[in-house]
Image (cartoon, rainbow, N blue to C red; front, side, top):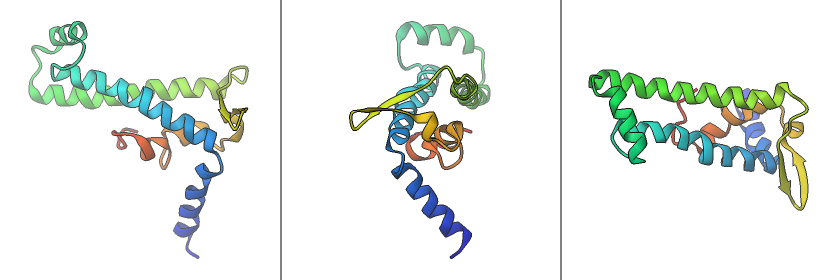
Length: 137
């Protein structure tokens, strides 16, 4: 058996054996990560909450198209780094926890994770599984 096959099998079974972690990861990506990026990207294109769009327009009205494209990439990176730091908080501060209800019981997902931040936003993690922006890392 090749190492790739073994790794692929491991990944396939990793989240299957940790449904609470997968549930949190999916919710984090779909409810926090992607919407955080989209709010800004849409505003740069003039879409979204009018007050927010108007505020953004004032900042970028002198930007060229090339500068706006760079700003979009920078925004993706800033959101990634900010949310990565937030996830690290739970790893670095053991008095904080994230629990998910699974089959009527509370599961501390940091306890069932091999590498919490990587599971959520690392390679082969929940960004790759659920995000509209899988290349942001």
